[in-house]
Image 1 (cartoon, one colour):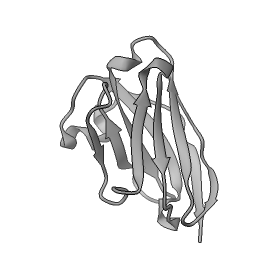
Image 2 (cartoon, one colour):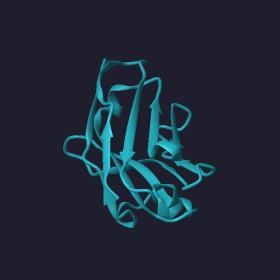
Image 3 (cartoon, helix red, strand yellow):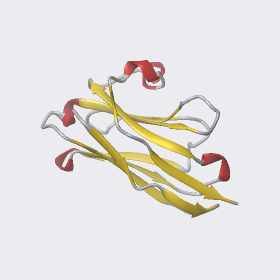
Image 4 (cartoon, helix red, strand yellow):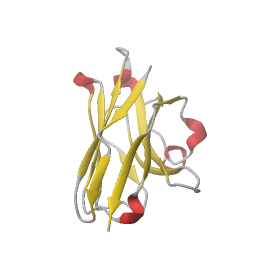
Length: 127
């Protein structure tokens, strides 16, 4: 499966953006998907994860209550709705996927568990 992330941009603090992760391949509905981000000079970190069916989600504590991950398997797309953005949310955001239905929270937060990665999309939040 090939992934393409888009939707990043420049937004003021308190604003919103919606990122999309579009996937090729007819089997995307059997893949779990995650969003990660990497700020300049920092490690890539987990943001959110969604199961293949969309029923189970996990979030990093830093985004819980502000970000929502969802998916539309008919469109082969996973979304990350980001509200109440803060300057510390500034980063390149990556989507990642791997075959599977339901993962534990620990697995969902582990970068090396995901075999497929898209290119990043830059989100810049100004203060």
